[in-house]
Image (cartoon, rainbow, N blue to C red):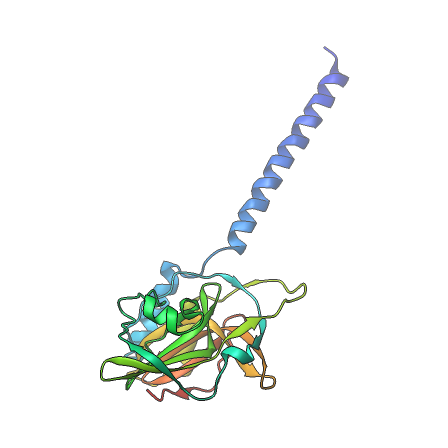
Length: 245
């Protein structure tokens, strides 16, 4: 037997085995990095916190934990107005029938880019339907469209419309889980007996000037009529805002 040749084959076999094991270890680690914390243990922890403070959640828990990034938007002066614009031909409109984004032909004909907005039941009230412009699948909470209803007809609208400016090499990051957000709010912010009525992922931010705005991924959580914005990348919580609805 050629022991030298057998030794070489044995070494190559071990080398190939180590490559296979190394690849399996790498793929397992990648799966862990992509692990969604919305697991049974997270749910159990939320339920424990809810029970301890008598918290109720009357909102659907989002299932998505996407990758997002900060954006800069610039308002379109031609499609952004400070005062309501009366409609020459009022029309009937029901956001419930349109499932959030407008599919109504009359609305699309009367209002520019109407199909690029998402209906917001949290802020809509007293004859005013509120929508937010979408960037991808998520609303920009500060870019609004408001429809004014009188006697069952939409008679005027006030619109804000923005274009997202091209970003540099900024990378998308995976947002924190809504379970993590709820856990933090329940433990540190919600008073006992809070009822959570809405949990929504979108973009929120501050105005640089009259035309430019810096928007960051945020979770918007509504509890007992107060709106909590939670930074979706680092978990920081803004002071709660009273819902004027």
